[in-house]
Length: 344
Ligand SMILES: Nc1ncnc2c1ncn2[C@@H]1O[C@H](COP(=O)(O)OP(=O)(O)OP(=O)(O)O)[C@@H](O)[C@H]1O
Ligand SMILES: [Mg+2]
Picture (cartoon, rainbow, N blue to C red):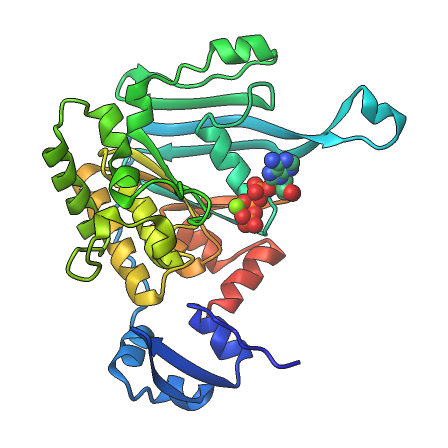
């Protein structure tokens, strides 16, 4: 079989491809055998690509940091259709996450890695209070200073709804960048509406012009501007590439000045130069505003560059966790070992 593999992942190219073609701004700028091009890149863009690896530049963990996001013994289920006659009356249960606990202090980053389907995105949705009441057991706390405004799910569905204390200030403080930049941006809204939506809700006193200034500034922060994309604000998501959409989603989260951001594969569709730019921005914001991040990723380089602690998931269980150095230096789980080895 012949394969044409389109990717941002240089490790993948190094391992699987025979020949490589490098594209920049619509031009094939360089082609050749993988070994030759990667060892002696001729074009400036290829050289930049090979030179950029995410750099670790994290705020040292503060021992006294207040907990921002905490989950205890979270068990999350999805309904599962039952076969045959039984299925007419009852639904089964698929346990997507078993008894997961986690702890994210202020100003720190917690990385989550794990096989596809291991329950990472499900866990993120639960932490955000976006799963139906009744599908979750355990506790989630979201704290700001002494003030605890969180969801605290209980056994019964009614109690669960009653304790979903998600007020708007909490919604502003806890933001999310969803995994899939294709389905998470409304195709009917312009970029200005998408990025500015949070401001309409959380800062309703701004007028249209002030809002537009903030939207442009947020887009500029993630490397999107009018000069490069004329009519940027009036465009729709389908007019952007996957990586550009991912940056729009990050701008949408950053614009309301959150304290905590859950990022589900935030840089998976970005080439390493843009990835480095986005990660550097996140690191800078973390230092300046003591932000907390929960980053879900398959990319060990991202974990290494960004995270203080890491949590490894497999089949819905947290199988390994601890400080990044410790876990990545001597991984216990076969999956973590493979990931670390593949990123060498
Ligand atoms: N809405 C749903 N209804 C039923 N099952 C679901 C639903 N969403 C996810 N699942 C199942 O729950 C499990 C965990 O899914 P989840 O999306 O959390 O995985 P993930 O770790 O984020 O994977 P990936 O790395 O591929 O994004 C999977 O087995 C999936 O099939
Ligand atoms: Mg996922």
